Image (tube, rainbow, N blue to C red; front, side, top):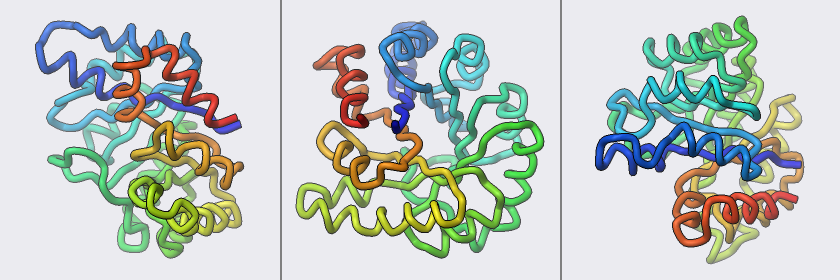
Length: 237
Protein backbone atom coordinates (compact mmCIF):
# COMPACT_ATOMS: atom_id res chain seq x y z
CA UNK A 1 0.00 0.00 0.00
CA UNK A 2 1.27 3.45 -0.90
CA UNK A 3 1.89 5.58 2.19
CA UNK A 4 0.53 9.09 2.64
CA UNK A 5 2.90 11.65 4.13
CA UNK A 6 1.17 14.93 4.98
CA UNK A 7 3.19 18.08 4.38
CA UNK A 8 2.25 20.58 7.11
CA UNK A 9 4.07 23.62 5.69
CA UNK A 10 0.82 25.43 4.92
CA UNK A 11 -0.29 25.17 8.54
CA UNK A 12 2.92 26.92 9.54
CA UNK A 13 2.33 29.55 6.84
CA UNK A 14 -1.03 30.37 8.40
CA UNK A 15 0.52 30.59 11.87
CA UNK A 16 3.31 32.86 10.68
CA UNK A 17 0.88 35.22 8.96
CA UNK A 18 -0.43 36.37 12.34
CA UNK A 19 2.41 35.54 14.72
CA UNK A 20 1.88 33.64 17.91
CA UNK A 21 1.16 29.94 17.84
CA UNK A 22 -2.23 29.56 16.15
CA UNK A 23 -2.64 27.15 14.53
CA UNK A 24 -0.24 25.04 16.56
CA UNK A 25 2.07 23.19 14.18
CA UNK A 26 3.05 20.58 16.74
CA UNK A 27 -0.57 19.72 17.45
CA UNK A 28 -1.25 19.60 13.72
CA UNK A 29 1.48 16.99 13.28
CA UNK A 30 0.10 14.95 16.17
CA UNK A 31 -3.43 15.11 14.80
CA UNK A 32 -2.40 14.21 11.25
CA UNK A 33 -0.90 11.01 12.63
CA UNK A 34 -3.95 10.30 14.79
CA UNK A 35 -6.19 10.83 11.76
CA UNK A 36 -4.33 8.23 9.70
CA UNK A 37 -1.34 9.88 8.02
CA UNK A 38 1.52 7.44 7.52
CA UNK A 39 4.08 10.20 7.89
CA UNK A 40 4.74 13.90 8.32
CA UNK A 41 6.69 16.00 5.82
CA UNK A 42 8.22 19.41 6.43
CA UNK A 43 10.21 21.63 4.08
CA UNK A 44 12.12 24.29 6.02
CA UNK A 45 13.49 27.09 3.87
CA UNK A 46 16.27 29.54 4.73
CA UNK A 47 13.86 32.45 5.33
CA UNK A 48 11.66 30.26 7.58
CA UNK A 49 8.53 31.68 5.96
CA UNK A 50 6.59 28.58 6.94
CA UNK A 51 8.23 25.69 8.83
CA UNK A 52 10.99 26.96 11.09
CA UNK A 53 14.11 25.07 12.06
CA UNK A 54 12.88 25.10 15.65
CA UNK A 55 9.61 23.47 14.48
CA UNK A 56 11.56 20.63 12.91
CA UNK A 57 13.38 19.93 16.16
CA UNK A 58 10.16 20.01 18.21
CA UNK A 59 8.21 17.86 15.77
CA UNK A 60 10.82 15.11 15.79
CA UNK A 61 10.03 14.17 19.37
CA UNK A 62 6.34 13.49 18.70
CA UNK A 63 6.57 11.54 15.44
CA UNK A 64 5.19 8.03 15.81
CA UNK A 65 5.04 7.22 12.08
CA UNK A 66 7.68 8.53 9.64
CA UNK A 67 9.34 11.91 9.50
CA UNK A 68 10.46 13.29 6.14
CA UNK A 69 12.44 16.52 5.86
CA UNK A 70 12.67 18.14 2.41
CA UNK A 71 15.04 20.85 1.37
CA UNK A 72 18.03 22.09 -0.53
CA UNK A 73 21.21 20.61 0.97
CA UNK A 74 22.84 23.78 2.23
CA UNK A 75 25.27 23.51 5.13
CA UNK A 76 22.58 24.63 7.58
CA UNK A 77 20.07 22.14 6.19
CA UNK A 78 22.54 19.27 6.36
CA UNK A 79 23.39 20.15 9.96
CA UNK A 80 19.68 20.23 10.85
CA UNK A 81 19.01 16.84 9.29
CA UNK A 82 22.00 15.27 11.01
CA UNK A 83 20.91 16.62 14.38
CA UNK A 84 17.26 15.58 13.99
CA UNK A 85 17.88 12.28 12.15
CA UNK A 86 14.52 11.87 10.39
CA UNK A 87 13.46 8.63 8.77
CA UNK A 88 13.91 10.21 5.34
CA UNK A 89 15.50 13.28 3.81
CA UNK A 90 14.30 14.43 0.40
CA UNK A 91 16.79 16.61 -1.44
CA UNK A 92 15.33 19.25 -3.75
CA UNK A 93 17.16 21.72 -6.03
CA UNK A 94 15.17 24.78 -4.92
CA UNK A 95 16.91 28.16 -4.93
CA UNK A 96 16.59 29.99 -1.61
CA UNK A 97 13.81 32.27 -2.89
CA UNK A 98 11.62 29.61 -4.55
CA UNK A 99 7.92 29.89 -3.72
CA UNK A 100 7.56 26.14 -4.12
CA UNK A 101 9.48 23.30 -5.74
CA UNK A 102 9.23 23.65 -9.51
CA UNK A 103 11.89 21.35 -10.99
CA UNK A 104 13.82 18.20 -10.30
CA UNK A 105 17.57 17.72 -10.05
CA UNK A 106 19.85 17.61 -13.06
CA UNK A 107 21.50 14.54 -11.59
CA UNK A 108 24.09 14.28 -14.37
CA UNK A 109 25.39 17.80 -13.76
CA UNK A 110 25.17 17.44 -9.97
CA UNK A 111 26.14 13.77 -9.65
CA UNK A 112 29.32 14.29 -7.61
CA UNK A 113 27.65 16.88 -5.37
CA UNK A 114 24.65 14.63 -4.69
CA UNK A 115 26.74 11.49 -4.26
CA UNK A 116 28.77 13.16 -1.50
CA UNK A 117 25.65 14.36 0.32
CA UNK A 118 23.83 11.04 0.00
CA UNK A 119 26.90 9.36 1.48
CA UNK A 120 26.77 11.62 4.53
CA UNK A 121 23.15 10.72 5.25
CA UNK A 122 23.58 7.01 4.50
CA UNK A 123 26.33 6.82 7.12
CA UNK A 124 23.80 8.06 9.68
CA UNK A 125 21.14 5.56 8.59
CA UNK A 126 18.87 8.22 7.08
CA UNK A 127 16.96 7.14 3.98
CA UNK A 128 17.55 9.52 1.08
CA UNK A 129 15.30 10.53 -1.80
CA UNK A 130 16.14 12.80 -4.74
CA UNK A 131 13.47 15.00 -6.31
CA UNK A 132 13.59 14.39 -10.07
CA UNK A 133 11.58 14.75 -13.27
CA UNK A 134 10.77 11.90 -15.66
CA UNK A 135 13.89 12.30 -17.81
CA UNK A 136 15.50 8.83 -17.90
CA UNK A 137 18.98 10.38 -17.73
CA UNK A 138 18.14 12.00 -14.40
CA UNK A 139 16.74 8.78 -12.98
CA UNK A 140 19.69 6.68 -14.13
CA UNK A 141 22.19 9.13 -12.67
CA UNK A 142 20.17 9.37 -9.46
CA UNK A 143 20.73 5.64 -9.02
CA UNK A 144 24.48 6.20 -9.39
CA UNK A 145 24.47 8.50 -6.35
CA UNK A 146 23.35 5.50 -4.24
CA UNK A 147 20.21 7.28 -3.11
CA UNK A 148 17.56 4.96 -1.72
CA UNK A 149 14.64 6.52 -3.55
CA UNK A 150 13.59 9.19 -5.99
CA UNK A 151 10.55 11.43 -5.72
CA UNK A 152 8.89 12.14 -9.05
CA UNK A 153 7.90 15.78 -9.56
CA UNK A 154 4.27 15.38 -10.56
CA UNK A 155 3.14 18.88 -11.50
CA UNK A 156 3.26 18.08 -15.26
CA UNK A 157 0.98 15.10 -14.62
CA UNK A 158 -1.44 17.18 -12.56
CA UNK A 159 -1.51 19.94 -15.18
CA UNK A 160 -2.28 17.56 -18.03
CA UNK A 161 -4.63 15.24 -16.15
CA UNK A 162 -7.90 16.95 -17.04
CA UNK A 163 -7.05 17.13 -20.75
CA UNK A 164 -5.75 13.60 -21.26
CA UNK A 165 -5.03 11.54 -18.16
CA UNK A 166 -3.39 8.63 -19.97
CA UNK A 167 -1.12 10.90 -21.97
CA UNK A 168 -0.15 12.90 -18.88
CA UNK A 169 0.68 9.73 -16.97
CA UNK A 170 2.65 7.93 -19.69
CA UNK A 171 6.09 9.48 -18.98
CA UNK A 172 5.62 8.82 -15.25
CA UNK A 173 4.94 5.13 -15.83
CA UNK A 174 8.10 4.89 -17.92
CA UNK A 175 10.07 6.79 -15.29
CA UNK A 176 8.72 4.56 -12.53
CA UNK A 177 9.69 1.45 -14.47
CA UNK A 178 13.24 2.74 -14.94
CA UNK A 179 13.47 3.50 -11.23
CA UNK A 180 12.31 -0.01 -10.37
CA UNK A 181 14.82 -1.54 -12.79
CA UNK A 182 17.59 0.47 -11.11
CA UNK A 183 16.56 -0.73 -7.66
CA UNK A 184 15.24 2.65 -6.51
CA UNK A 185 12.31 3.14 -4.19
CA UNK A 186 9.66 5.48 -5.56
CA UNK A 187 7.93 8.50 -4.05
CA UNK A 188 5.85 11.17 -5.78
CA UNK A 189 4.61 14.63 -4.99
CA UNK A 190 3.50 18.07 -6.15
CA UNK A 191 -0.07 18.99 -7.07
CA UNK A 192 -1.45 15.54 -6.41
CA UNK A 193 -5.04 15.83 -5.17
CA UNK A 194 -8.33 13.99 -4.73
CA UNK A 195 -9.06 14.16 -8.47
CA UNK A 196 -5.81 12.78 -9.86
CA UNK A 197 -4.24 10.70 -7.07
CA UNK A 198 -6.11 7.42 -7.50
CA UNK A 199 -5.38 7.18 -11.24
CA UNK A 200 -1.68 7.83 -10.62
CA UNK A 201 -1.35 5.20 -7.90
CA UNK A 202 -3.44 2.54 -9.63
CA UNK A 203 -1.20 2.71 -12.69
CA UNK A 204 2.02 2.73 -10.63
CA UNK A 205 1.05 0.34 -7.82
CA UNK A 206 4.63 -0.09 -6.59
CA UNK A 207 4.68 3.55 -5.54
CA UNK A 208 6.06 3.70 -1.99
CA UNK A 209 4.88 7.11 -0.82
CA UNK A 210 3.15 10.31 -1.82
CA UNK A 211 3.84 13.59 -0.07
CA UNK A 212 0.88 15.98 -0.22
CA UNK A 213 0.49 19.34 1.44
CA UNK A 214 -1.10 22.26 -0.36
CA UNK A 215 -4.10 20.47 -1.87
CA UNK A 216 -4.76 18.42 1.25
CA UNK A 217 -4.70 21.42 3.60
CA UNK A 218 -6.94 23.37 1.20
CA UNK A 219 -9.44 20.50 1.17
CA UNK A 220 -9.29 20.32 4.96
CA UNK A 221 -10.60 23.89 5.20
CA UNK A 222 -13.88 22.66 3.76
CA UNK A 223 -13.95 18.99 4.70
CA UNK A 224 -12.12 18.88 8.03
CA UNK A 225 -8.62 17.53 8.57
CA UNK A 226 -9.54 14.04 9.76
CA UNK A 227 -12.06 13.47 6.98
CA UNK A 228 -9.67 14.83 4.36
CA UNK A 229 -6.81 12.58 5.39
CA UNK A 230 -9.10 9.57 5.27
CA UNK A 231 -10.35 10.60 1.83
CA UNK A 232 -6.79 10.80 0.53
CA UNK A 233 -5.96 7.44 2.12
CA UNK A 234 -8.88 5.85 0.29
CA UNK A 235 -7.40 6.97 -3.02
CA UNK A 236 -4.32 4.86 -2.26
CA UNK A 237 -6.01 1.54 -1.48
